[in-house]
Amino acid sequence: MCAESLDHELLKKLDESGLRKEHLKTMVVAGMGFFTDAYLLFILTIALPVLNSVSGFNIGAIQGTTNLLGYAASNAKIIDGLITSAALFGAFAGAFVFGHISDRLGRKVVYGLELGIMIVFTLVSAFSINYQMLVLSRFLLGIGVGGDYPISSTIMSEYSSTKHRGKLIGLVFSMQGLGLLAGALVGLVSIYLLPLAVTWRFMLAFGAVPALYVVFLRRKLMETPRFSLQVKGDVEYASKATETIVGTGKVDRNGDSTVSVGKVNYMATLRKYLIFLIGTSVTWFIFDMAFYGTTLNNSLVLSSIGYGSSPNLRTHVFNIAIGDTILAAAFAVPGYYIAVALVDTVGRKSLQWIGFAVMAFSYLLIGLYYSELGSDLPLFILVFGLSYLFANIGPNTTTFILPTELFPTQIRSTAHGIASSIAKLGAGIFTFLFLILQTAIGSNGTFLLLSSISVIGAVVTLLTIRETKGLPLEVSSQEPSKGIHKFKPQ
Image (cartoon, rainbow, N blue to C red):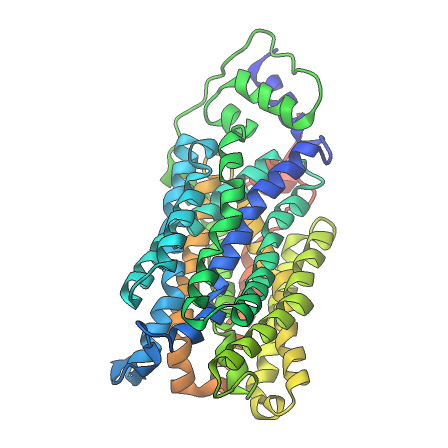
């Protein structure tokens, strides 16, 4: 059997395999990382009000202002912004570095190491003795969070069948919603049962628990057949991995153990896919600015309309946790699973631009009628929750899926790493500046700004992204200039 025919047979078996036990196992192992990612990133919405008051930190009592972007920003708020955004800036570095290493050395080589980084520095952050130590440890755990994005998505994509690929990658990412909900529930329980002085430490440390569950399972996963075959040229390993995933008999290798593969010129290949790199990076950057900027500052948004505010700290934090639980359970989590149900039928591109459009509309309503909505809590939650729901139905899920399908195996993880890295930079900047923006342009202006950038996200999606549903990876990742319509299966 010639190398081309063997390549075609192996990939055909993967693409036509349906939904197998090994797919679901990989989905859980990869998804638990995103459960942990979400928990670690969003638990601060509940923990931060405690940090602002507890002995040893007492950030809220820090005096003075600093000129930032021409505005006198409270030093206490600047520190809050640094704590909240530190993990996102770490993710910026981690996504780029781990993504490229994964393309050079293999997905399996580094899989689990990024989770180990999260575990170690999650525990370090829980034992921080001052805010400087907390910011540094949160930055370092963020490196692991960032590394999880390109590797987990690429592994799931390269393991999946064509028919179920979007669903499986979406299920991996949907664990983020459960992590959000878990953070709110852990916050509720800890505020209710524990002394305030240790509450925030317990909240942060608990994030290591789900990661410990899967770190060793990740190390045992096989290298993906596509990387083994198309990058390493290892036919024997690719055949064995395919048999394990598909659960069928051996592929006839006709004695072949290796095939010749060319050396990858990463920069030259990325240039060929520049339009997709711009499209996936810009849309993800825009989305993360809006999503993380609001989600990581939920307590501020809720407090600004009078919800949760109480002179009693325990009551105040408990109310914020209740608000987060409602938003997560009623809007965020359902959105992820609606996306899973629709992504392989409606398509990635359609869900993404529609999601951006509804976000823009929701933010516009809040920006124009902030005072009126603020006096009607159920209506505010409904309109604000609408942005959550369609964010997760659309761009929160699809920006994660598309980079795994628009780029070839040789640069797939690198490209995903670049896109997710740029996205986390946007998330970090906007999260840090959210407090400043509220001072500079008010809550109305902040939401109007979010509406404007969401419109840009919809337009960029329509102009730079092509649909990938129902296409084998080797088809969906053809060079943009060639066009998928020119592909002729062998």
